[in-house]
Amino acid sequence: MSNSSSLSKFLLLAFADTRELQLLHFSLFLGIYLAALLGNGLIITAVACDHRLHTPMYFFLLNLSILDLGSITAIVPKSMANSLWDTRAISYSGCVAQIFLFVFFISAEYSLLTVMAYDRYVAICKPLHYGAIMGSRACVKMAAAAWGSGFLNVLLHTANTFSIPLCQGNTVEQFFCEVPQILKLSCSDSYLRELGLLVVSACLAFGCFIFIVVSYVQIFTAVLRIPSEQGRHKAFSMCLPHLAVVSLFLSTGIFAYLKPPSISSPALDLVVSVLYSVVPPAVNPLIYSMRNKELKDAVRKLIQWV
Image 1 (cartoon, rainbow, N blue to C red):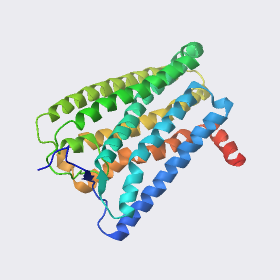
Image 2: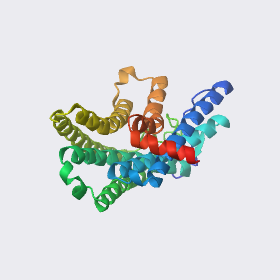
Image 3: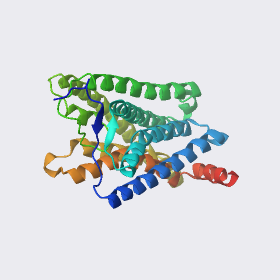
Image 4: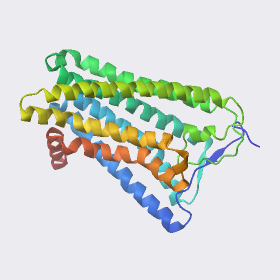
């Protein structure tokens, strides 16, 4: 039996056993990772360089792209390296760092998506007061609060998780380190502390979800009152990308952690974990740029300049 003080490494879940499938996994993840780097990198550069995009909506979008890059970088390169070198190992400190970074970026992103819902609510329901409410200092404070809440959340979970004695081996049933999988290796009732923290985090996340739902109920109520069809179309274009990103973020995460045990299988669990952890950072830039003429023009000019 081993405990957390004597563990030097963990063994991650492998995508495949044969060399051909390992290289296929490496190639697929490399393509997704490069797409995420390119899409989010273009958005960050375009927003930073184009003065026309120096508005609250694009400021929050820039923060979202940074968080997306951080979350996918925390887990994908290590998984790619393991497949390329035909290994499953990750060091103890590497596992701690992976959990810290991934939970930090995901928690901050969810908080930021909540802030972005408030931004859309003010823009559509209180347009005359938008400049006063969403000033530059207010936006910076909201973004800082989102990042700060993510840091506080991950600090509590990481410190508590790795203070628990681990004696159920070192095999993690996931292709990256995450809190629920580490808790399965615990050998004492002290894991109940972390379960309590997870429940508190879930309650806070549910509160954010209710805030987003209420915001969009009021937004759509206000949009339907707009007399011109062009005005309604413009309002929907402002909200639909954010709503699509929130839906993708929540649906994949909820299904990954709350799916019925009856439909659970190793293959399905692996696919679902990829859907909620790897796909959104690569798809979010496409969602935001698809119906946004200003952003597409800025990216086009950036590409032409390069």
